[in-house]
Image (cartoon, rainbow, N blue to C red):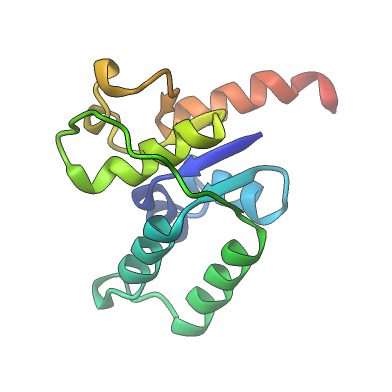
Length: 140
């Protein structure tokens, strides 16, 4: 499976590793889930994770980002002709569409109105984990 991970889910996974965002991050880091990004998404990951308000260890963040950059499916996405409530969310939708991601996982689904999604599946972390478990229940 290939997903696009909104920055808010990445941050939530680091802040609270035992909830759905943390589990998703674990799946990405174990290689069970593929992650798709572009330069804009990677730049946002770098910017947000470096913010002092989160108090993340710089070395741990550098290691995480190095792993993501080495393992992610890098995409050059075509612009979509839609408007989103927050234009900064556009890279996540464009990359999701470009790779035909299994899901765009975000804590802010309202930022991706149904009429603007271009058939991209947008799920909360809990919804994604529910779908993941259902799809992998027989593989144990």
